[in-house]
Image 1 (cartoon, helix red, strand yellow):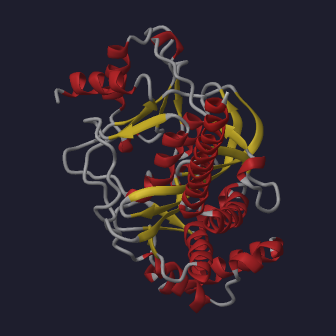
Image 2: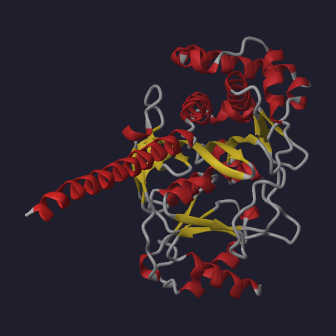
Image 3: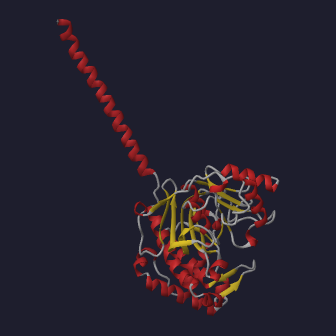
Length: 393
């Protein structure tokens, strides 16, 4: 009996010590979790500013797209023969100005510069008029984005896009109107903005003013016109109606994910419209290699301009994106793929070059690789094998 009385306090002491130790571990674990969460960038301000800037630019470009005659009158041609419209200049000025006002230390890799606009007073006046109009229509955005008041400020904002990019620090990649030829046709185009840190895309926002919510084929499309597609590293990819006013938190947007199709009868492919952007004959051979039925392959192929293709892919309405090089020397521009790249990855897909290697956004304004292949995670390696076989890689 005395032995039991002696051991009882010892047991109590041991149990107390064990509870104290567990409590310390519990507190340490959750403090660590809280610290880790607070230390992880959520890019809340970046996403808000990028979203509102893309929305304002999308409203402007949509109005132009709906008035093709006006857009064609405001068109010039750059040395590389691609059409540039007043919409490109106005969109880049709006977005660059918003980024500079909120993140003055960040550089911007933009597609346009202001020289042609400076040399054409009539076009410059048109650009300023467009900007002034959309600013008056979106006054609720001005507190976050700021406003442009004169031509000199427009020129200055456009030229903020002169960064060379690189593998260190952070910068934005902007395509003010991706798919200019589609824009001029009144067809698909996109306003694309991405944030890149140390060569990695961490945030992307794409405004698709003419894109229907549901894309089943080239001829069967339905639902709300105008989509906003956003992705943040580690947080997923999301859809919201583009022309709803203001900024909607990601938690209130619709999460989108790719379907993990694998069998040829279930797969759909998105490709470009312009033959000068990719080898359509090679793409046809790759689809045959993958086992597409020649009787139905046309129905399984969706042709779209711009990074709209990435949005259709990320939302699970297609499975594969093929963009094959048209020659051995051409290199893709980073602003044509940065926002779409993170959108697909965060939706459960992969993006690479024709060798299957991830795209490198840290080597300047151009991607140091050939072609772009994107698909869901499950079928990616199979697609790359087909590309290598057809292209003799």
